[in-house]
Amino acid sequence: MSYLTTSRCRLFYNDSAEGDPSSKEKPAVLFVNGWAISARYWKPLVERLSPHFRCITYDQSGTGRTDIDGFTPDFTISGFADEAGKLIEHLGLDQSRNLHIIGHSMGGMVATELCIRYSGSLLSATILACGIFEETPFTSLGLMFLGGLIDVSMNFRNIFLVEPLRSMFIKRAATGRIDREYQDIIIEDFTTSNKEATNAVGKFSIDPDALREYTRNVLRITSPVLCCVGMADHTIPPEGTVTLFKKRKATAGSPTRLLQFMHLGHLPMLEDTERFAAELKKHFDFALQFYKKDSPPEPLPEVVRIP
Image (cartoon, rainbow, N blue to C red):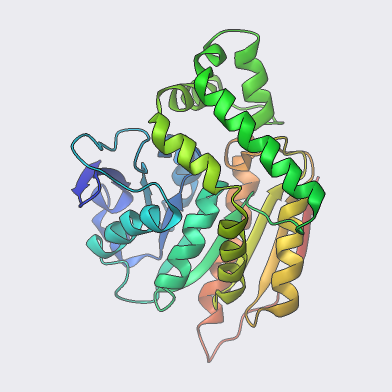
């Protein structure tokens, strides 16, 4: 556990190489968190991946143990990418092509920005539960409604500390069962996150201009991309990730795959850690072979549906 002081925060992060210096030679995996949650929810996945990869998690400004007192960070996609970029450079992850980036939910937008900035270091990208939608009057109305819900939920978020609203909140996030430890983390992080940051993140996640830029960036990634979604997700409509996959598949020059967990929700890393970790390893191994010109990778199925 360490801190990195930047112009926008005192950033808390975990690097598995601190406990195992030999892992500095392994491919690195940077995990970018979703809305109003600290990096603690990656722990079960990190435990399964760390024997094979150097795993880096961190708390974004306004969440967890990252300190913004005395700082004035801008809560934008670019701003969040700036702080993650400082961490990437501080750890030397930009020095060679040895980096996998995973972005979950809102973190998918930040992760995609990082993939463009550090394209020369990138082995692969994984976009989890962060889709796109065709722009229609219906979807525009839906986004306006969702923006109103964000305002309401932030003003009254402490109501989710008590039952039955607590259980309702968890069930909206996770269709499958997750351990009580992580239920508590989700509730604690949401109710204690910085209100200004959480509001801003919620708003730019549904801003049409931000979503258009996100789409453009996804299509520009030159490394292999895995689009992953729980098809029983009640937080973000899962069809958006399928649409993202189809659009990238039709236009991008590098490999794109779709991983669908047919009965999971917004948190596959907690709902089915074992199978999610196994699929990530396949993706990472494929990406490593993709860049070995003398040893092309064995093709993987473009669409995988896990019951």
